[in-house]
Length: 189
Ligand SMILES: C[S@@+](CC[C@H](N)C(=O)[O-])C[C@H]1O[C@@H](n2cnc3c(N)ncnc32)[C@H](O)[C@@H]1O
Image (cartoon, rainbow, N blue to C red):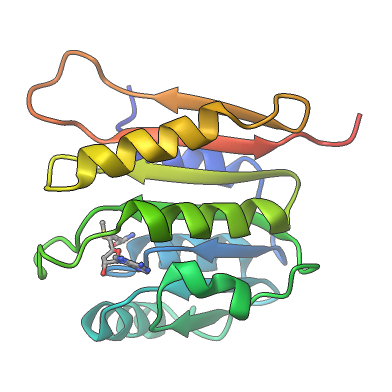
């Protein structure tokens, strides 16, 4: 079985084509941003956000090393502000969030439920029909459980005529394995 991270990539890959516009809400060390940049190719566009300078620097270096920097717009600001950067009528085909803290970085800089929910709402407003917002929730750290519960409650309340929301989670692993949430905007019938 795929782990949550690998499955998050599969869920995004299934709906993205070269030339699409996508978003990485938590660039971190840049692995997801690079994955998205390679999926959309040089004609596509990736908006990537992270609060930390270190994360933006790592991401930029990784993208440049793979010749995939030209299609990526990096922002050192909160994903809660994505609405100030991406026009409301600019359709996003896919969005990835990897919630928690930067591996190998400052464990006190974590995603928080209020800004996470603001960002997810802004993504859903811009999500193209058939597009997916895929969220990997690491929740073993302080505040992680509250964030997980708030995000799941938000997703569970989405109107089923417009969205499908599903969770993927290992239920027999020790500690707090990450949980994967996928929200898809239903394509026009
Ligand atoms: C689990 S890491 C992301 C890992 C990343 N996707 C990768 O491939 O390496 C979570 C990241 O979220 C960032 N973060 C925390 N709060 C944020 C916010 N409000 N807006 C944007 N990024 C935030 C952290 O700085 C951290 O780098």
